[in-house]
Image 1 (cartoon, rainbow, N blue to C red):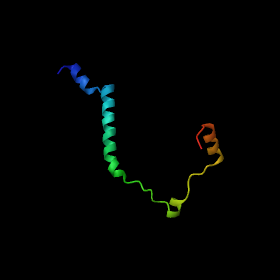
Image 2: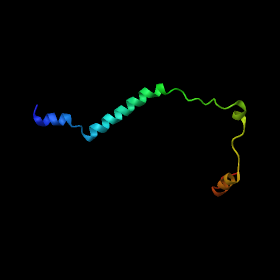
Image 3: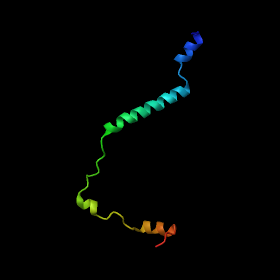
Image 4: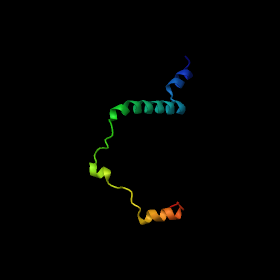
Length: 71
């Protein structure tokens, strides 16, 4: 190999760098996905799960009125 070819192989171009970075991020996400564990949403009691959450307050009514939502 010539001296120029050796330098080309050692130097990492911008596109090659970004391609490698993207592949590394994908691999890391694939590995950490199963290891992260499951999200737990059962921290609420049964009473908290059944209570009403939506409240039509004054600012919600104003939003509906301004945006002309039908009643």
